[in-house]
Amino acid sequence: MKPSHTFVVLAYKESNYLEECIKSVVNQTIKSYIVIATSTPNDFIKKIAKKYKLQVIINKVKKGIGYDFDFAVSAAKTDLVTIAHQDDIYDENYAEEIVNAYKKNKNAIILFPNYYEIKGAQKEYKNLNLKLKKILLLPLRLHSFAGLKIMKRSAICFGDAIGCPSVTFVKKSCPKEIFASEMKCDVDWLAWERLSKLKGKFIYINKYLMGHRIHENSTTTEIINNNIRIEEDYIMFKKFWPNCIAKILVKLYAVSEKNNQLKN
Image 1 (cartoon, one colour):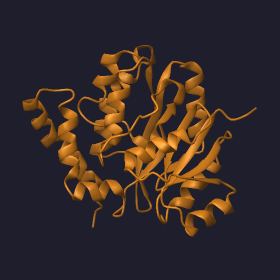
Image 2 (cartoon, helix red, strand yellow):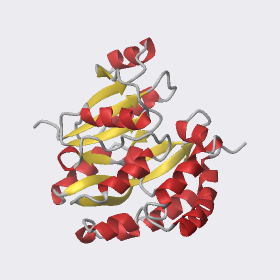
Image 3 (tube, one colour):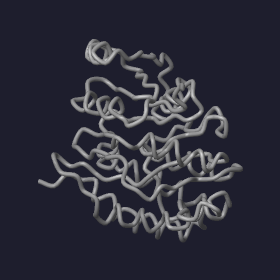
Image 4 (tube, one colour):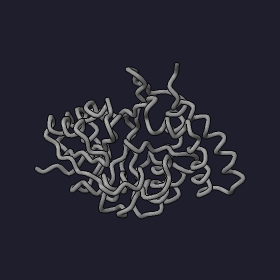
């Protein structure tokens, strides 16, 4: 039987963690198609791709991170596609859990589990940031109501509770452009806001199935340090709340961002 799921590994320049990410998607309990997508082709990526016999698809249109994400989704030939960020890892049963959840929820738009954070050699399952996200996702625990617009939006109106690298997209239920925007940090939150307006479910799997790496060279850490995140957070909160409330939420939300800073 042909796989119904694809991992598109989004590679950028020369990441020390790329091979670890690829190993994690190769060693799944069920078979998925795996390809590498990049806008920065180089010998480092080619060497790893050759080692694991993976195809490299080059994105020649360099518009920004949101467009890179959309390119990665388009690179998959299956209906289910996960954008595997090069610094992150996927537990061996990630694909199996996603595929099984989709079989029970054919009207899903996206499917996603909990994730843990990786800091150095440590896996962190409980911190302020992760606890808040689990609370925000409570409305989506009941899959019977996960297709209601109010339930989908209630899970993301107080912050970006859905970890982008944890998400699997159902291509047939998504528009061609999911992420396209000029945003640099909140491209994923904007995508969930757009998708929340569509017919279909946000399927939340309340299990830890992948790890998101926090390190000093990560895009997220760089953006937070440049204060771009605060500006974009305010834009996003205004999509759900009046300006006066959005300003308050931005200040509160900034507290959780501190968790993305590496400890000395």
